[in-house]
Image: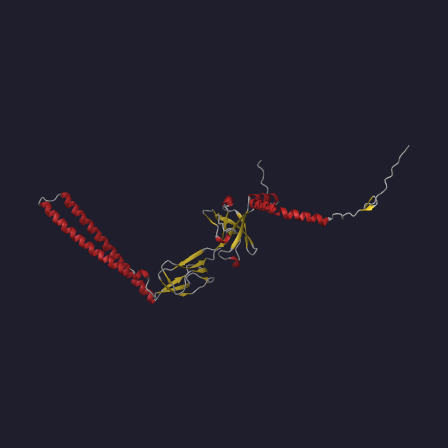
Length: 340
């Protein structure tokens, strides 16, 4: 006896004659949605990994453009009667920048008269002490001849006379020096009253900052203004001490300006100091870690619109991995010949 089974084709949406509603098949968009959710959830971890890897591969530092600066100081005390330049003005060597008048006497000149009076009183006191010691020495010598004093007492009286004489000489020298300075100050004051003093530019350049106000009193050696020389500027970079091994003379670097312009440069001097990161480069938490001060020269002249003292830049130093990749993909680099 043979039994044959016949598998009849069944409809996909029916089960024992009952229609079953199935959900639509998953297509590309639902899968993509899950991938996007996974990407969003794992994005902090991805960012951390990429940030760590980039910090280990790319050596970056904040920096600024620095122009050679000259401080223009006041040669004498006086009132700044004329200020003939403004920040941003180009000046030439020997150009008149400002004038100092003498509408008021300087405080040093006024203070000399009381000092001279005190020195004169000190001289009179020293003279009276010398006369007193001379009288005592004479009395002691008479007593010594009469046998009423010893030789040691006579020597002690003579020593006191010598000390009093030296003190008188010192006070006379100070008084003479003070009178000479007063006479010189009087001549300088007279010259200022008649002509005033001129402030001259020591070199060609551009005025970047003025520190004194017109009609204000300035003392000798006060900084009146700052001039930037027209020499090619340098770039000062604040390098993390962890990467100080890259700070050697000749090390190449890529310099990026805030407007997107790119330039190249190289280190021109070995770092010699570490300073705290400037306030403008501090982190969001206000931390200012120590940085190695690195100075770089630009490989090409800088355009006039970027020759601004303090202009912020980003400096990227060439690391060892970059050197390896450059050697790996630079087919034009000659291969050194092997020694036979």
